[in-house]
Image 1 (spheres, rainbow, N blue to C red):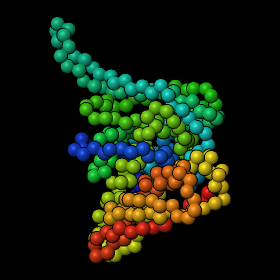
Image 2 (image 1 turned 90 degrees about the vertical axis):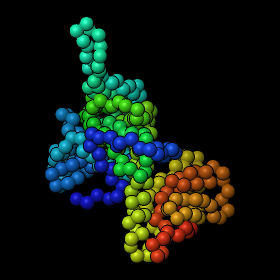
Image 3 (image 1 turned 135 degrees about the vertical axis):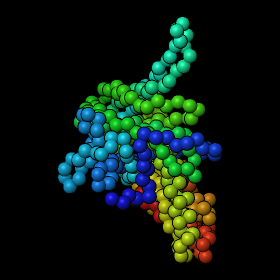
Image 4 (image 1 turned 45 degrees about the vertical axis):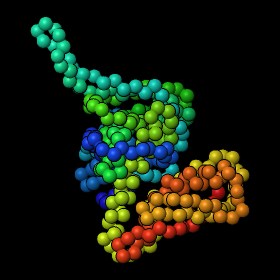
Length: 310
């Protein structure tokens, strides 16, 4: 099964130290679709069973994954109903200490890390599951992204009633800046969550997509002339007030693209001059990534028009 370029592959591994860390900018939360490894390739995750093993739904049948720690993620379109608050996140690093004959410590070897948190849902969820993700915050877009993953079956979450979870992870130490994210799923679909370190997954998606974007640009330079293309579309985050104010209306944005496929300027066309609307449109479009026109092996800056409907 061939996966789209937005997939993030990972097993229990972390990237090597990077000389040029990324200066992260806030990224909007986007739902992810988890894929798990089967003998025949990757398939969308349907659930995590009571033994904490991921399963996939293939031709209407539940199939156990080949490896409980090998995943791929694809940025999706919609979240499952509900919202889960992730609080009381704690990471405890355990080690074995060695002493000499006089009981004086002389060595300590990390054995594992324990991650605990409290999950509180705003609706009843019959069969919840989580993936604990961890990645190195110092990864950059010129390295192959990597992350660690650990699954856990959670079961029923009752509205307003917190549920504590605990997971064991291989030892994580050293000087790296680890970022954590507890991603909640039900029926293979991600549920919105907030709280402790839920920003880690959007950051990791951004790193991975920028890495794939750079790869795609390099590939195109070896090919024929090409028109402009869209590589990454980000959701517009309009407040409820803006949605109500402009319900049924549409507008057009002129987006200037530089030779690297980044958005360099955004202009709203027409008579709409609402500062809040402009800020919402510009902040979202700034995160889009394009494939600029290619002529004679070189990229050319251009302008595209993006229609927006409420």
